[in-house]
Length: 85
Image 1 (cartoon, rainbow, N blue to C red):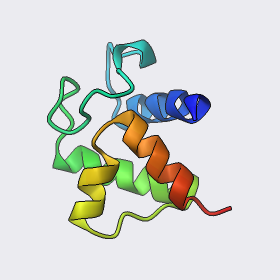
Image 2: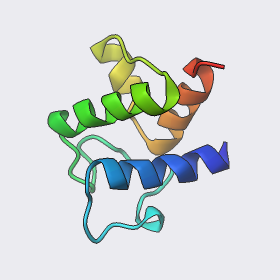
Image 3: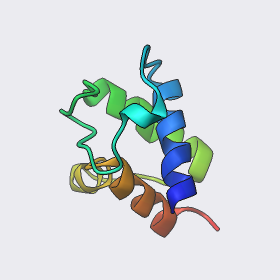
């Protein structure tokens, strides 16, 4: 799980072109949406597309998205549980 969390931090930074942010700046349990990173609904759409492309994971409802994007750890758990094997 720790490797997936680290991988997702890099993908979040790359996908959203977050300048001056390194993976160590993102806490595993920090809020993603509405947190210190300034991720908004447009950013979430970009992350959803990345998750579908890179992991075969679909976020099919707003409630599912709220749970998945609660933190990097929650996102990693969601990907682990739902990724195509």
